[in-house]
Length: 84
Image (cartoon, rainbow, N blue to C red; front, side):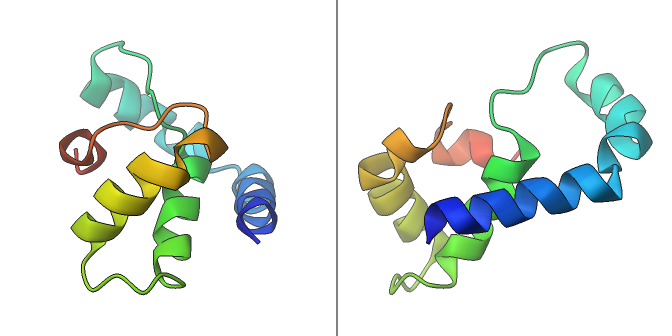
């Protein structure tokens, strides 16, 4: 199910072509640093949270995403970094 959600999100972002519209703003915000987590990864994590039984997003992120879901994503950042 996680892979299916990721593929749907990735295809949506590709079709909507959000990259071209917000790329300039993000490059200014990141000061030329490359992002570690992709938008598709972040959105997939947010959507998958709704299927979890965790009461807070922090619990879900720290226990599930940084735990058993870590291998499903290329680069998972710490909870504090995920908020910025």
